[in-house]
Length: 207
Image (cartoon, rainbow, N blue to C red; front, side, top):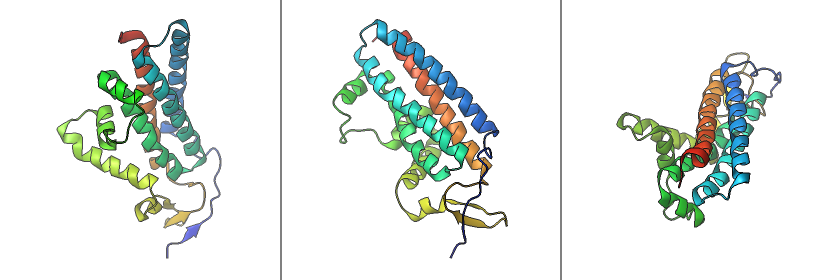
């Protein structure tokens, strides 16, 4: 049986990591951009596209903020699990801007039948480049495991103990800076795209 460890984590353990610093900066930029969008929205009646984007972008950025705070505290499995809805909202925001049919589909309540797969939503973010398809499938499977209870998800709670041995942690994980950085940079990317799509819907796209 794997050893189990109880955490003793300094709240500042991950604060100075490059990924955390970058994510905080991009979140501040995104929130500033969205304030401009809200001001624009208050001046005019939103179009169908703008209304849909206004339903998608705020919750996407709020999810990114939640990931940021979970990462700083060391709750990495929870932060990783939230990456899935964040990527979904980011991919949806791209689809809405790319095709009016997705705007209509969103207005219909995003029915399960016909809803794009997680793989398609990730592809909408990264682009469907042939050399990236396998990586997209791997990422989608990682998100599935992070959200659903299975052995693979449980293994994601393991990190090195002071002895160097991989152990299961109760609560925050104090010794996984590379993993924190990876999640933080991915989250920052989504925050940038979400804010950019909000501005695009209100200032550049005239539909």
